[in-house]
Length: 233
Ligand SMILES: Nc1ncnc2c1ncn2[C@@H]1O[C@H](COP(=O)(O)OP(=O)(O)OP(=O)(O)O)[C@@H](O)[C@H]1O
Ligand SMILES: [Mg+2]
Image 1 (spheres, rainbow, N blue to C red):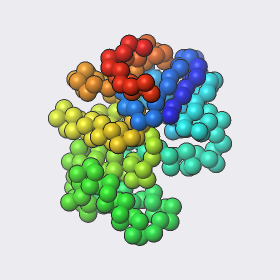
Image 2: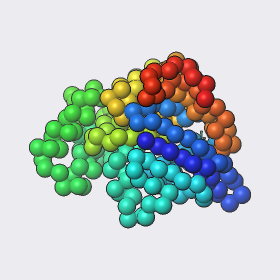
Image 3: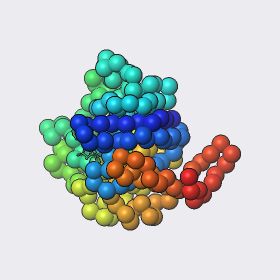
Image 4: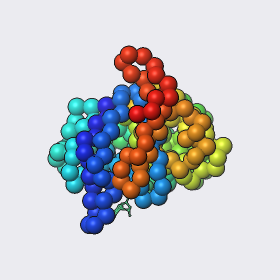
């Protein structure tokens, strides 16, 4: 699903990423960890083409992201959902309209919008808050809206950069459980976090970055040969 080959990202003299090789399979959920400045956000920005690598190649599905022209970025982004630490909801639009926004932009039929948005809000458990504004929702509820928005078009990939960075521990666990549920439905999920409790207890693959390099990559992986638990790679 995601393949990075020898990816380096340089900002002036800083190597934010340094020779990263990584493969994440379709339907897999992986946690990206590492201290502040390790390169987690940079790696994610390369995936959604907010930034371009200085060298190396990045392929998502059958899209060569590293050589993608700017005009094809919307095409790439329709195939992924992005979840942000600060939610990035439109403050004057209801939960429903936040989730519907991209579909409306694409000119979807009203019945299609109703069906898809209700389905996404139902999945995140927020159907009854559909007509509340973000300011009327708790942080955890706002992040659920952010996740509903990310999945409403049924993307094969969801990328979440510290989605629980602004949330309390109990709410963080709920959000991670929701992301697990989404991955179990077949979506590839890549999520960065500083939450050590979740890293240790969620039972997912953990990729560690340190100074722009992958220094460890452990945890469950579903291979075509079957389920292997706790593999050290
Ligand atoms: N636009 C930029 N210009 C210059 N340097 C940058 C830029 N973006 C990131 N960096 C640098 O690249 C390195 C990696 O940053 P990045 O944001 O990817 O880290 P991170 O792992 O996401 O950290 P955090 O856990 O604090 O979010 C840091 O040294 C950072 O200062
Ligand atoms: Mg970051």
